[in-house]
Image (cartoon, rainbow, N blue to C red; front, side, top):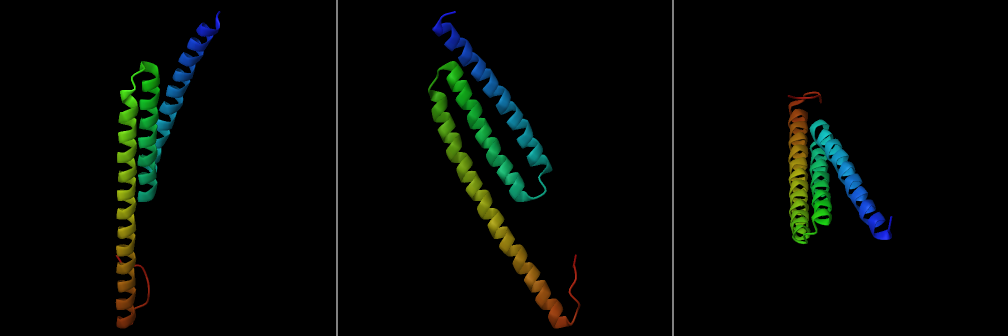
Length: 120
């Protein structure tokens, strides 16, 4: 076995191992998205899912030799980042709204002389 044959077989083994690890990461991330108890958990899961997809594209680019896939991965990275920022802003604004509603309810209850407790 020459050095070139060893390098080719090692490269094929590394690509296969990378795809297996990415498949495991993909499945675990989907489980996290489905089971995530809160919205921020699901948003982080979607961000990780985007990164796993970028990893798949990188492995396919290495396997096929087409450099165009790298441009696609960069585009997906930018879209994933912007989506994560948009979700974070949505969660942030939603949290302020929920806290303002809770504060208003507590203020109304205090004025009415009601005891503090959970309201539907």
